[in-house]
Length: 187
Length: 193
Image (tube, rainbow over all chains, first blue to last red; front, side, top):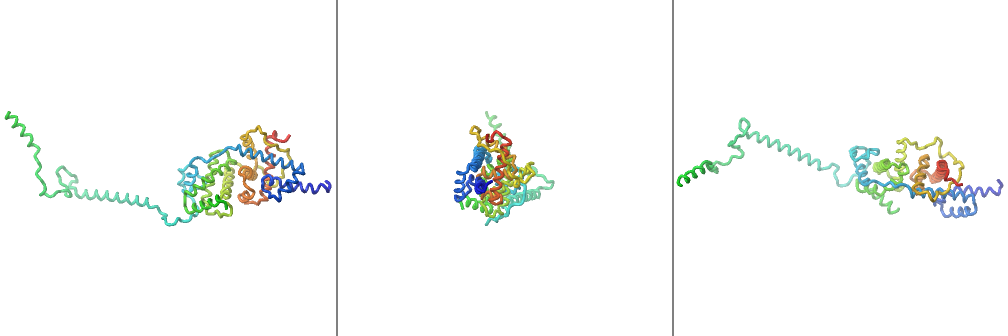
């Protein structure tokens, strides 16, 4: 290798190291300008750039022909639900596993809201109160029963017994049957 | 700061305050890009969905650690790449195929590579390209995917991978050389005559 070649080789070595960045559009104009001039003047470096472009064409064509993978419908909502339920990464995809608890990120508390939900507490209180009322009603009814513990027809229950002065004699059920017999005798 | 990046930061802040809808909006903004990225690591739709879901769950859990030194998209991509590589490791695919350190291997001279034949359909080119990518060490596959398919800048790649731009350039150079060698080994018909 002659001394005359050394500067060219040095330039070529430097140019070839810049070709990939040049093809990627990553060089500034101050760097790209001298490189373009060298490529115009140097066939071997021009060949290196051409091969770089060929490889780039493989990728651009592959980019155009790559199969498209899209998110399935409802993916974002499902992932959000899992995240806020504290499901750890690596858990099953099924939303039914959302009950798994794990460390949650340290979130800032939301201003003006309670951390404990109110509705379940109200529902539980209502259920307890209803149960207590039911048993209270049973207890009161049991106290009102006569000895023997059963109620027969005609037995008056003390808490519904009316005032005697308001009781009217009940009509007899047998009176209407006697009148038709007298009418038929006259005829 | 670009409007999109500002919107991302607003959604991040709202998510940290417990706003579920804001996180869902973040997922909707990036699910397409992440599925596009992950398809280069697996062509199985169910596995891709697992990887993307895991990425978002990890992002949610670590959201309070996002320091905003990079953009949210770069931070999210970093989680996605690591999650995809972890997935490959769990499924039995070693991150580095060869025992040699790919950073130390000088590419051997090989025949030139021609441009893809115009008669080759782009789907066939995509299939062949991914066949070659599957043969590469993950350290090379990742830089090629980020550069050639995600069209990321060197700076974004450096931020994502936590390495210098000089290392990106060096790694890309070796990755492309290895890609070309592997392509010609698997398909010598594509070499320059």
